[in-house]
Length: 140
Image 1 (cartoon, one colour):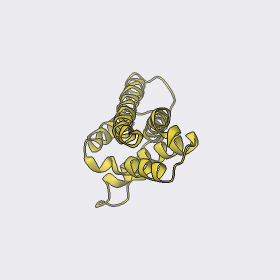
Image 2 (cartoon, helix red, strand yellow):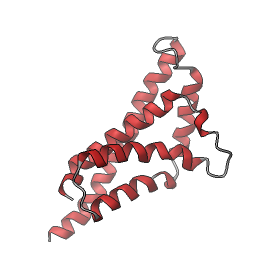
Image 3 (cartoon, one colour):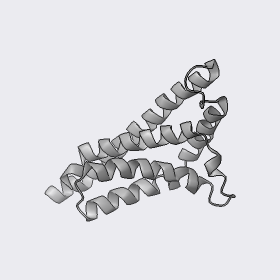
Image 4 (cartoon, one colour):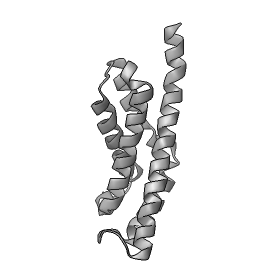
């Protein structure tokens, strides 16, 4: 009976972690866009970084963006990894891979993204990984 409960709980925990990740991307990205539009905040925040975030938001709508996070969860569950560090760092890395995956057929110009975009993505991935660890990862 425990295995059935685990099978039902894992997708739900993954979905909650994905919602948290999207929320962090939207809220933190919106903050950075407003800082760029008003000319406040760090010097590296430009309006171009805001447009980069919008382009990446469009890339997030495809299913292949879930693959790195699913792979992280599957490896963690099969190997019974209970470390919060694995899920937090892995979540940040999984979300940072998304821009690379979205430009597989194009020249490697993904490094032209602003550092602000990478900060938003890493922060959102860290948050999503932590939420998944809280809900399901610590009991792997």
